[in-house]
Length: 398
Image (cartoon, rainbow, N blue to C red; front, top):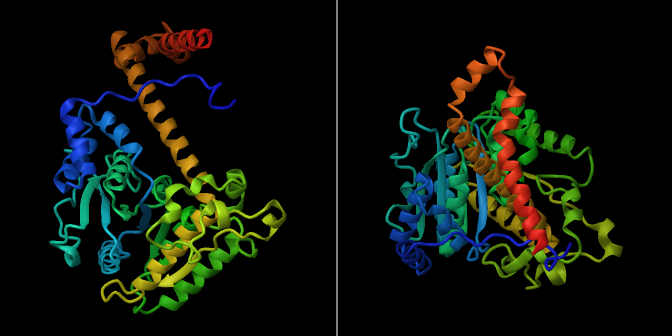
């Protein structure tokens, strides 16, 4: 089905006059407007969806880097140094640090900490600490929307720092283009955790605090793990941008979009993904996917940070030139659509449950054998399904 045959989609949410003015201010470069928009997004203030919808067409220019790993690996210090180095070369930077949620307010427990000491007073580094809102170790939908706000604002690089709480870190892949996993020396438990799942999401592995004893052993362990993950191949299926997903991109390279003319890590020849990034079918077998690198840094002194940024640039260039960015974005937006639809349908179902006396009343009726859970679910979802089917029939008739 091509675009002309696809069912019509609904109109974008309508912006209020005040929110429209706020969006204009953000797009004009007002940091105050950016802060207000992210606050509305985080608090889910009425109208926030219309704001994010209006910003969407202005996104796609930023390189989004995720920094994840276990607590104590030095993520915050490394992010500070990364932002400073990006600024030294002229890039503007947005940082979102996803902190543990307060069990009382839902806000970021560590939101008031001083974490960007090297960049205090630099208006071209925008830092925001956000709550994971119960998604410990992951990124809430609000965080993904905040990335869009920073992207639309015009930040060259957006850095995401996650809580660091185990396997749920895979959520970062849905928002970041490049994922760096931090491990500290001698952290045997951390390496075992990586084996349990985090290993699969890393495009770059960083042994931070590399001046400590055990650093070289940890580097060797990670390199061995990467090698095993690849099955001893030359790098295919590496990272969360593997050969299989490259194949799904096709040969048009269209996904490189306006990132092809990006500010960092682009092709030295100036060729875009359309011209140089996607090989002919005859050459497809010669292409290799990204092979994760294992790097060493000492965040406190800044040692290794420049090399890490070069690796981020190389990965960004790979995404553009291979056309893999198209597949990455499709996966990201597909997951976002699913998440939003599930949340909205869940909200409708919750309202229907309340109209039927509330969940406790329904549970009591099931306990009394007056009904059963399947019958209750059918009664709640049935009207929603009927409405969707009726709307679909009407759209097909039109």
